[in-house]
Length: 277
Length: 168
Image (cartoon, rainbow over the protein chains, first blue to last red):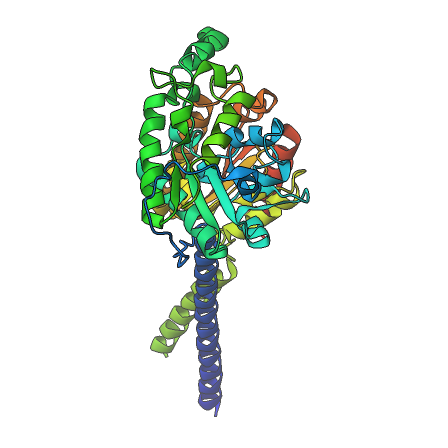
């Protein structure tokens, strides 16, 4: 009788321990699964959704050729998206400030286009894609890249720029997109920086990595993006260069990188006389 | 009878091992949790900052602009100011493992911060430069966080980071 009782106790505790073990194994497994799921979600949030645009693309040459003057009405239909070299269009009142899409800071780096917000015409600050969806602009002139060329590789530059164009195409298929050339910098740009930076300026400083050679190379990338995405390319830099290929000093605002009102007027005249075809 | 005792002892030892594993809550031997999603930590950090304009960047930015190999990390989140009005930024990375992985993340973050300092353009927002000069990195278990923030925001951010990873 005593032996039977002992066996009963033994089996009871053995069964209890096995049940506990199974529950523990289940708990560990469940926790691992949950962790893996949350990790995957977190990793996914760091990924980029590559837009596969199915927007209308235009026929005809990629580089806009000379045309009749399209007039001010044509310019008024544009949205100008870009960095600090676009900001000046509104700042100098060359076009309406509502047409100029730049972040509040006035500058935009190509690599950050998907995270950045721009100041919309009603004063709100919204992501570029939201602004495109809201506005559905008839024409869009994009001027980007001068900040990016100091650190972006060719592949990275093309990937980001293409992604931007395809996103606009997908969100607003009827928008006629023109990729503008990056404006040249003046010959005095580097020497200005050296003078202001003094001995403390590091050799690897970013301003030294913006050169006209890099700009010329990047403009070829921009042109290739226009071709591959079926949009147009505006070679406006051609009216801004001096005989040595640098920004004509009469078009710069003093820092060697940004245009003055005369320079912007040259660009707008070029835009009007090289209309979208 | 002897075999029953042996089986009982083995079962008890196995049960104890399982219970300890399950009740650990993802804590490592250092008392830091390893089961917290980076996104949740990032959310907790964002909540204590004075600027609500920080947004996450994508993997292309981390690999292309920050020159960091995203395949080396379990997960990550980097937030920057979407308006470009300041240089506020922080990033949280979870290493793939606690030993060599953490060191690799620490080095990558240090390299990135050095690159930022080397390429700083003095004419743009000079008032923001101290944030970069005083950028800090903290490591808790498998997680590494850097912060380019004002002193007060940085203190609050690291506090939230550590609180998120503290053992329950």
